[in-house]
Amino acid sequence: MQKFALFYGEALRRYAFPAGHPFRVERVERFWELVNKDGVANSEKVQVCEPVMAYESDVLSFHIPEYVDFVKKASQIGGGYLDRGDTPAFKGVYEASLYVVGTTLKALGMVMSNNASNAFNPIGGLHHAWRDRASGFCVFNDAAIAIMLAKTKYKLDRILYVDIDAHHGDGVFYEFYNDPEAFIVDIHEDGKLLFPGTGFEDEIGSGNAAGRKMNIVMAAGSGAEEFKKGFAKIIQFAEKAEPELILLQCGADGLAGDPITHLQYSPECHRFAAENLYSLSERFCKGKIVAMGGGGYNLDNVARAWLEIVRGLTH
Ligand SMILES: [Zn+2]
Image (cartoon, rainbow, N blue to C red; front, side, top):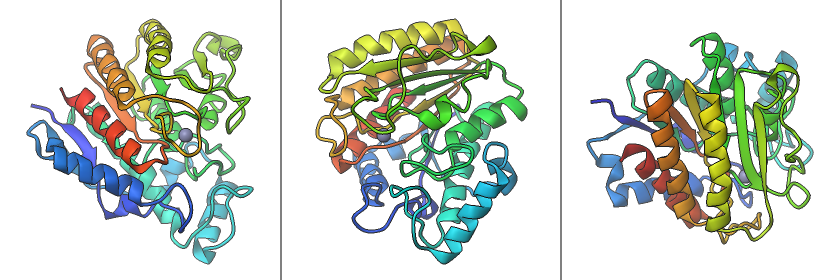
C-alpha cells in the first residue's frame, strides 16, 4: 500500500527568519507537535520522510543565475534583506532554501514514481518568489520549480496548481501566465487590501494559456461559507483542466485570528479543500497531489489547518 509522505526534520526548521519575524521556526514545530499528539504521524497510512537538499541546477530551472548568486553571497554574509524589507538574509539562508526546494521535489518524485500516494512539505509553497527576486518571506519558489520539473522531467502537460493561501501567489501566477501547461487557480484576500496587491478576476492567462488561470477574490471578513462557494469554482476549473498532477499551496493565514490578514476561515476549510482535491485527483490522476504549507502566522491555526490537510489527504 502506498503511503502519504509527510516531510519533517531539522533541515526544514532552518528556513525561519530571525527573532521578531512572523515566519518563525515555531510554526513548523507547533504543527509537528500536533500531528504527533493526534497520532496521524504514526498511522500506518503515513511515512515520515527526511528533508532533502535541491541541486542548484533544479533551482536554475526557474530562477536566473544572477539571483541565485545574490542569495548565495547574502547567505555567507548573513545580514540585510533579500528584498525591500520583508525577507531578511541570514547565515545559511541559501542552504535552508535549497532544503525547501529539494523537499518539495522529493515529494514530487515520490508521488510521480508511485512511492507515495501523495505528500506534504510543510515548509514549501514559497509562492511570492519571482525568477529574479525574493519577495514576501519567499527566497526560492519551490512550487514554481516543481511545475518546471513536472514539465521537463516528468513530461506532464496538464499541471494544476491550487493556492488557498490568504495572499495571492504572484510568483507562480505571473511567471506562468503565458504557459498553457500550468493551470493555476488562486483564491485569496482582495489585493486592494493585502500584499502583494495583485490577483484580480479579469486575469485569466494570455495567448494559448487564456482561460488556464483563475483568480478568486475574497472580501475581508470572508469565512468558511464564502470559502466553500469560492472553492466550487476551483473544482469546476480543475475538472476542465483534467490534471495529470495537482500541486496544492495550503497557506493557513486565511484562518480567523491570523495577525497579518483579514479573512475568517476555519480549519474546516483546509479539510474541505484537501478532501475535494483528493476525490478529484482520484478521478483524473490516480491521487497524485503534492501539498506545500505556505503562510500562516498564528501558530495554533497553522498546526490545526495543516493537520486537516494531512487528514484530508490520507483518509
Ligand atoms: Zn500568505
